[in-house]
Amino acid sequence: MATSMALMVTVSTLSRWLTNESVPGDIELVQMATALAAFCFLPYCQLRRGNIFVETFTMGLPKRAQSLIDAVWDFVYAAVAFLMGWQLSAGARDAIATHTVSLQLGLSFGYLIFICAIISGFLGLAALATAFSAVKGQQ
Image 1: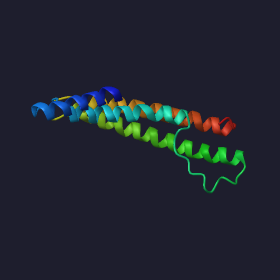
Image 2: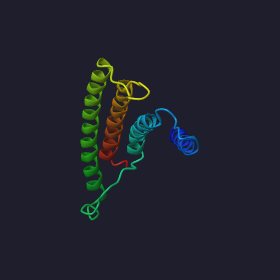
Image 3: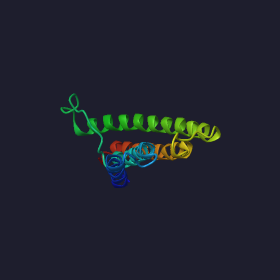
Image 4: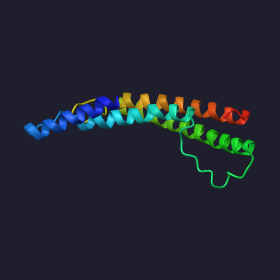
């Protein structure tokens, strides 16, 4: 997805430079693809424990205490992800019901928002999985 976005931006930029015309809707497509790509990487990043950790105050604690603190924050992250998914699904329903579309290409935003809501649910599940893993001390 990222490669196709980069290729489209390159083609659009070259086209604009050579012919003063760009790929129609290039900005809309890049915005939508970037949002989708960002959401797709969130659950994977959580499962790989790839998020940024600030351990300034916990470095001196025993490993078990560190794991339990991580578990608490993973549960908080799961709650936020589920809340975000719920609100995104409400926004998607509204966007679909009101036929909200992009300006240039007329693409529906609602279905993209709904996909992001589903991925937020996967993020919540991933955060729960890492939280339970931390509780068991299997990080």
